[in-house]
Image (cartoon, rainbow, N blue to C red; front, side, top):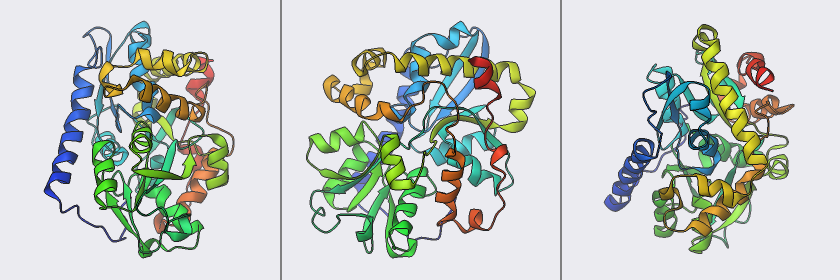
Length: 350
């Protein structure tokens, strides 16, 4: 989604450099993590992830690390983009067969004439947190105070952008009354917060855990649990998922089933193992030198995940309500929610 809200450029050269470094680091993670490029055996599939090291997308790499793709006879190459909207673009361009990203992109794409559907749903909550900088904490005590503020999002048109706009509108602030700033995640988000380039912003773990440990910010809205999603958004909010172009799904059902089988096994495994056990399976560099902090980040985010890959009841309706609140394209469109996801493959996996 491209919105006309004002956009503040990050003028500091150091901050821009950090953005580039983060993108490179994400790409490096996709190519250097054990097994992430596949072993050359089995049926080849490319999946773009909107940030491989983000805890909200943890099932992608974990499936690889647990050997579940190999067990299904798949050679899965996972690539990484720092923001979900860029991962979406790669899918639509045909560069990859699947995207691990937020389900809400399927609705947005339908209004643009693209048929894309979620084939397995990782979560029933966004896993996102609205952080306010320590410096601005006295002035921003709720989304009602967003007016006139600079708020960080991973990129314009991303799901963090969507949710930030909804929180504003829901609390009486027009989308034209605050400034979204694209700051990515990880080091670039934290630097923007510390330098005052943003007053607050929406991000996920492990960035949240790092911000809190550095005392660079405080939690304003926590949507890492179903309860947090209900309070902030009025219902379950299916977010992280594997979504694919519908035509490709229909032409490769056997392959899609194998992918879904692997992901459902992973979600079940996650539901019966501790955060420390999960952290131990992930690439060592994901902890950025602090295993305890990374484990805590996983623990805080675990409640967002489903244990069976099934779309939560009333989830699509909540997403549509959120998007219609600020997106004129969706507000005036007749979205066919039944075409934005399918339960065919998760039902067979069970």
